[in-house]
Image (cartoon, rainbow, N blue to C red; front, side, top):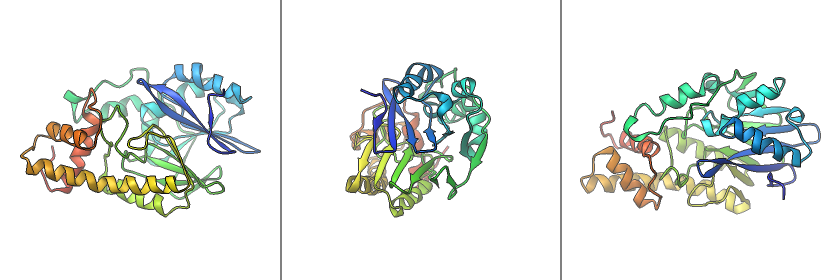
Length: 294
């Protein structure tokens, strides 16, 4: 069985190992090009998983047309340096505001942990950056894919929409209740996240391909009405989170770490070993509620 799982005639998903779970790499094959979206978490993933998976489809790195980024978190761009090392001619593109982060993802991954040092694990010291060969902006078309800027999970998140098939490659842009590693959805910009979901709901989406197995859906690929339902449910969950945060306040819970635990328990999440991702989400809801934020 091929490691790239078919989504439709053109699109397939590779689940690369990451922290006991997986991070998604997407391949889009057309008659005249092969598009790779994201690269997994490390050089080892490229060597031991991605390259053999491409070989199963009769492809080498040199057969790829372009490498695109959904965002610059380490589990999605950790393999970029190795790919460029092996195939320097392969052009890599990223949202314009993500170019600096792609240049030094280790620095960026340290910065996003800095607000919550007691609750954060260290980032992978092996993360190495690359210089983007080109950048793109919201609304542009890149290799036949519509770029939809979807800030929320982070500022440089994008989705790629293949208009012909209605396939939306989302990376981490649709958080839901997060993965089992997170405890709850990770949101760094709540207004941006809600706006992004409204934009996605308005698009002609027929299939959603996510970057992880997000709760409550647990499926990386959703089709037809289930895809549309997923987008709407993700938006509804932002309102549910707000209600839970108000309930925590009503119960006298005001410490952010305790609020994070309360939120995780009440969305049915799994308590993670580190709370920093949930603490970002708590911070956004505290802002919305007019509470003090450090």
